[in-house]
Length: 179
Image (cartoon, rainbow, N blue to C red; front, side, top):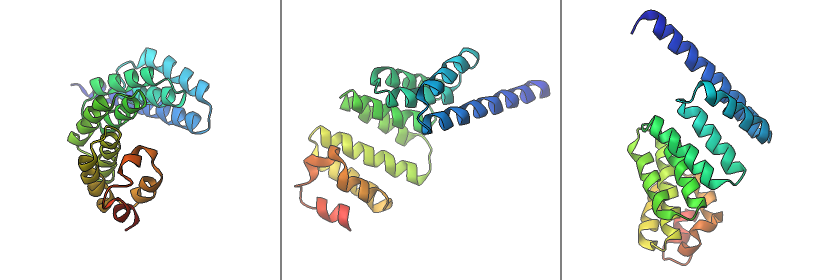
């Protein structure tokens, strides 16, 4: 690749980063329609940006349009299968659609992607949730144990998460979330 093409590629990346940051700002400030419009217009020029597809998925999740959110996250995973967040969020969308098997598959793909430990244990936590929803109590408890023993910040979440309701009467659950 020539130096000019490398510089041009760097310029595109920084432009995408600027757009993504603006979209995040709009989304976080409940300007969902503005965020969605910016992503859709930007995808006309940068259709191969997994980051923009990820943002579109977040927006569609906020709009409770789970089918289109799953499609956007899936597009992001196809564009770059080695990114953690699109896989993890695809699992969230599949869970919202009630497709727990696909939620598990997507989250297991997130685990295969190199990520930091905090992300890793968030994926284990989500796997515990999806398994609990499917009534796989032992599997869910083992995954939850791995997540909570390695990321204390997830304990409060686990105490309040209705996806884990099937585990609440299981031996050891209270110890896991309280210790």
